[in-house]
Amino acid sequence: MLRVKLLDPAARAPVVAHPGEDLGYDLFALEGVLLAPRQTVRVRTGVAVEARHPATGMPLGLLVRDRSSIAAKGIATTAGVIDAGYRGEILILMTNLGEALVEIHAGDKIAQMIPVPVLTGAVQTVDSLEDSENQPGTAPRPAAYRLFRVKLALARPKWRALPHSVSFKRGLRAVCCVHRNSGSKSAVTECWVN
Image (cartoon, rainbow, N blue to C red; front, side, top):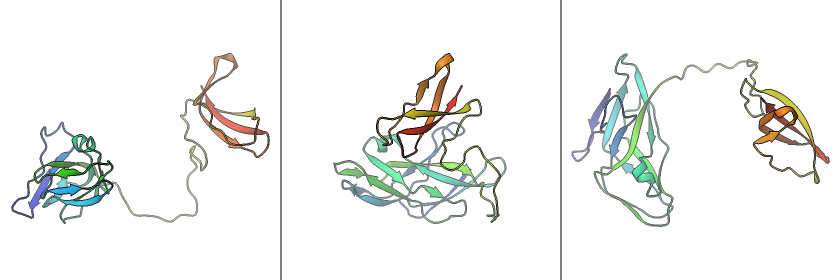
């Protein structure tokens, strides 16, 4: 459920064309705006909102995302997090990434708000954290793969990118290869092999 307060007589309430099917609520520009190339502006909507889960009534946050019709013009919507307790006017930060002037008219659909549950809790400072397979400096690996270390001889000791998939004897294939330069003519590459 989305409760809306209109802050301006010309403001339009957000809409959802197909409740229960569409992911977001469409937001409308309150005023016309010209966006020069590489310019960022705040676009007023003239609305304040309160989002709640329709079944439980729990507060929901909102993510502001691009509309495909606006993105196709080279306009990006950024800074799009609306906390569940925010009751001020929704302002849409828009950037013209293109080289041409773009005009936004009053009443244009400019962005969409997607409701999300609030999962933040208290922050606890601890001396240690639980172990994880995703350690600093390594790529996350699927549980179905085994880690193999492969030594490669390089013509030069410089770092170079490796292919995403490498063939081994016995028909094994490696994915998620991480190249580590050891500073010599050989380097260690970690590969997760299925």
